Every structure is written in structure tokens, then in C-alpha cells.
Image 1: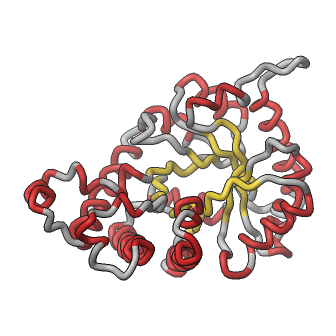
Image 2 (image 1 turned 30 degrees about the vertical axis):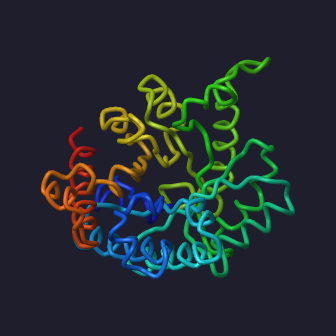
Image 3 (image 1 turned 180 degrees about the vertical axis):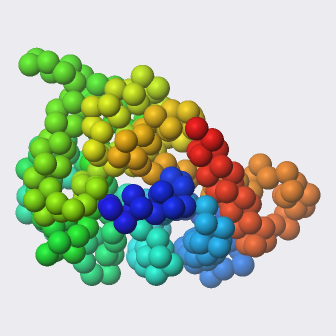
Length: 299
């Protein structure tokens, strides 16, 4: 998490989301590969190289569900994508949103912090209870790989009001209870990382409501945020700027970058005649990433 924080300062706060559904790639391009999964892999690898060349992002977030949906080959593509991002020098955030009883959580932690699917940081769902977080936090210590986790705090979907915003009998909202636990974990982690500026445990905080952004940034000044909701989900750079204060954070954009070719004026003729190439859509995604970085750094 400290490495990610430093990368965000150097390259800007943009996180490129590789939530790469095959439908995000033009059909004529997919047809040139042996499978949809191989087309996704080629797009991911080329985009990682483009972003590295442009210096437009600090990290990549890979949403595992899109790869699970492609079966065994998809999971191989997932593993290769995570490895490619890390080999290129980026922090890889695996968006897996796991959360289960202790023994099962331990297996999830081993699966994503070691072995074929090893990554740097994962997302965690705390809503089965805070004991489910412990197997993951065990891997954040310097003797277990110094991994990181982002715990769901205030998500970007409309349905977050169903649970996260509900008032508790003893006061405060459900999300406040989660935040208090994150502060407890942060305090405990300082014994392992006394010289670091950043806890290995961060929070997922959506950027779709300006009032929540200010409240949450002030409530958790030492916690680094993973910020979804920018772009396609309606969040804007002004709200992100509030969330990026103090401990900072990284702002994810997925579809707005992956599908940039659909709106890129320079590609209108090729879209109309069905002659788009992989180079075309990667270049469009690269331009969108640069534009997103510039937008986020205006404030």
C-alpha cells in the first residue's frame, strides 16, 4: 500500500480497471483470435504496455469475475494479466471482494496472496463479521509478504443504501462501524510499520456522493482509499479531489478506458466500416487514460 501511495504521487491517482469483458472488444478483432479469452489477454497486455509508456496511471485493478465467466481459460488469462501488470512495475489490485468464515477466508487469502493468482492487494467484503478479515490481515505483515487489502466501506452502487447507510440502534451507520474497525486495524498495524506513512489496510470509497466524500475523508484521514465510480458510474473529478486529500487514494476507471474506442472521434470511419484493429482500440484507451489523469489532477 505504501508503494501504491508513492506511485500515485509520482504518476497521478488513476487506476486502470481491467474489467475486460469480451464484448468490450470489436467483433472483427475478437474473430482474429482462437478464443474470446485470448482476445482479452492481447488487449490487456497491450494496454498495460501503453499505460506504462504514457505514465498515465499508478496501478491496475483486475476484476476477477470477468475472467471467471470465461471458465478455465479465462482464469489462466486472469493470472497472466496480474503477472503482466506486476512485471511491468505496477501495483496489481485484484478485485475479488471475498469475505467468509475464518477457515474459508484463509483459503481465499492463500489463493490470492500466493501461488498462481498471487497479487499485491485484494478487495475484501466485511459483512460476515470482522473476524473474517483476520486471515487476510495476517498477510499484511512484513513477515508474510507485506500484502495489502481494501475493505468495502462506502461502495458506488445505488443499492449501497440497503445496508451500508442503515442506522444502528447504538448510533451511527453500518459503514461507520466498518470504518471504526479499519481505524482499529490501522492502529494495530503501526507496530509492524512504524516508519511507514500508510497502513496496509485501505478502504473502498465510491465517489458518487459529494457529501459522503467530505465526511469519510475527514473521518478516516490516515486511510488510503480505492475510489470507484469515476466516469461511467457518474462520479466526477471534483468529488475525487476531496477523497484524494490527506492519506490520498487511487481512482479507478474501467469501462471509460476499455471502451473509449466507441466514442473516439478519430476512429469514426473505422467503426463504421468495421476495420478497427487492436492497435486502434489500445491507442484510444491510452488517450482516454491520459485524459482521465489530466482531469483528476485539475483540482
